Figure 1 (cartoon, rainbow, N blue to C red):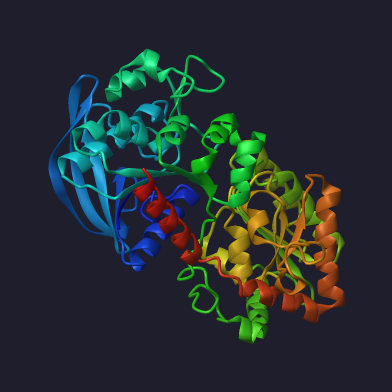
Figure 2: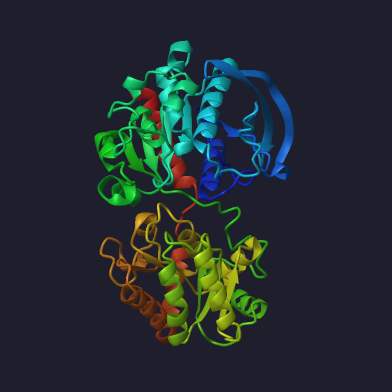
Length: 492
C-alpha cells in the first residue's frame, strides 16, 4: 500500500510534543510491514537539520494557488532516520515557516491552511497518487476538505483520507478569509452546520470539524479517549459532530519505540536488564541515587516525568512529593512548567527541599536523565486531568517501574489496577489506578503501592515484571491502522 503522511511534526527533526513521535513511529512500523510511506512536512527554519540525511531540492516549481494568485514553493527531499520526507518551502513575503518556531504565531491558521493546500498541490503536480493520505490534528484538517471539494475533480478522486486527532483542545478556528485564500470560496456552503461551521460560533470555521466531516476515517489515540471525546466535555465542543460520524470514528492506542525505550539495550543507563534478570534494575536505582545525591538505602523511589501544567494534574504532582516523604519514600521529579506561576511555585519548592536527602526536583528536561529515572525508580505517577494516550506509563511499564495513574484516556487502556480491576485476570494486572481528582483518592493509590513495596517486596517485583511483559510497541497499532486503511480503501 502507498501511504502519505501529512503532518506539522515528525520526530526527531520536528518535535514539539507527542504528535512528532507518533508520525515517525507509525511511519516506521508501516514501512517495516512492506508498505511505501512518504511524509510531507513544512520546511521550518528552526527544525533539526542534523537529523536529515541527503537533503536536496527535489521539486523546484511548485505553484500553489492562493488568494486568486499563486505562491511559488520549493520542495526538498531528505531521509529522517530512514523515512522519506518532503519539506515544503514557500517563497513569499509571509515567511510562513521562517519564524523561529513551529507554533504560536498570530496567523497559525493561515500558515497551516497554506501548508495543507501546498501538500495537495505537490501530490497533484508531481503525479503522486497514494492509496491513503493520513493527516494529523487541526493543522491538516483542511486536507480532506480540499481533497473532496477541489482536488478529486482534478485527478485525485481515488485517494482516501484517515484523519487522526491527537488533541481536541486545539481545533483551528478561523473565518471567511480561509475560504478565499484556499479557493474553497463558497461562504454560504461551508458555513452550514454540517460542513465547517463551528458548533458554537456561527461566524467561525473549524478546521478540525472539517477534518472529521470530510475524511473517510477518523481516529484518536486511545479507545477510551474516543469514548470520552464523544460523550464528555473532553471533545471540546465536537462531541455532537463525532456522534454524527461515529460509524467512522475509533480510538487506536499509540505505541512507543522499543528501539529507544528499552532497558535491554538502553545506552543511557549503566546496567541493562530484562524481566528475566530484574534484579539488575537495583543497580540503576543506586546509580540514580548517586547522581541526584539522594540518601542511599532501602526506600522506594517514586518519580514524575513530564510537563508541569493543569492537564497533567500539577496540583496532585505537588501533593505527591510530600505524601511520598511522609510515607517513607523518596521522590524524583523531572519536568518543566508551561506557565510562569507554576514554574515559580516549583522553583520555590526546589529551594525549600534542597537539603532533603530523599527528594530531588529537576526543573527542565534532560533526555539522558529521563532514561535513568525510568530505570532507577520503583514507581511512576501519572495523575493527569485528561490524557489522550499517555506515553509515560507505557515507558514505565517497559522499565519495570510500576505506574500509579488516574483512570482517564489511554491510561485506562494500558494500566490495570492490581487490587480492583475486574476486567483483567489478577496475573495480568500491572499497576494502580485512581479515578477522582482529589488528594485522598490519589493517596489511596499511592499508599497501596508503597505498602506493597514495604510489606511484600517480592509481590511488588512480580507486579513490575508483569508490566515489563506487556507489548505497547507500534506492532499492534500498526495492524489496527492497516485494517482501517484497507476498510476505507474498499468501502468508499
